Image (cartoon, rainbow, N blue to C red; front, side):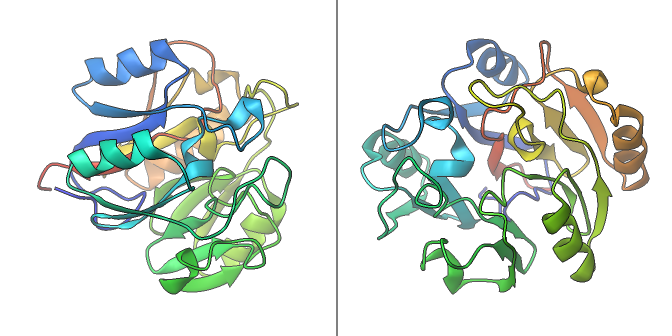
Amino acid sequence: MFIENPNLPKGRVTLVAVSSLYPSILSQIIHMGIRVIPIVPYSHLERPIQSHGDMVLHHMGGSKLFLAKHQDDLFLALKNFGFSPEYIEEDIAPSYPADVALNSLRIGEKLFCNQLFTSKKILQKGIVHPVKQGYSKCSVAVVSEHAVITGDEGMAKAMKASGVEVLKIQSEKIILDGYDNGFIGGCCGKISGEMLLFTGDISSLPDYKAIKEFTGRHGVTVHCLKGKLVDIGGILPLMEENP
């Protein structure tokens, strides 16, 4: 069944969208019994983030998703699983802010985004909480509807003001080729109501112990794939078993 509340599955996740460029991560996810829609590189973005799901795809809930234009392979893959994808009207281009039209964080009824650069179609649903951070989705790891982890001060402030509990961490030691550091939201995703999956070993993070304590306090366990912690644009949950 489709996940109705984006980023917040209730049952065991059965389908995710994830970058196609990390074979080890893909095979480990598949080995866990989760089907994968691989996201192929999208030439309208900078090379290191061309296959990042949080840059090219936005789940509105249920069968509805928005995509960047000309993603025919991803469009067809989603249709084959019964989704109703639509292209956004805005053009995506490599340089900020023309690259962030889809990179907004949807959590419950709240939508955290920079309204100036977010696709108009995405703004149609949810209570908008404006932030300066254009990369809202990839900068936040969603633990529950009421708890998140982020290294971004502006996101932390806005989310606290909206009633969400926030663990503020350092963003060091998250690998993203071509950049000094990646984002915490880009290296994880929920694969059930009670499990947050990371792309690699989080024990390398300065705030490792705080993350384990925070997630545990909210009834969520952390599972790490083998390898280094890499920002791949997130592990985006799309379908789940009946909870």
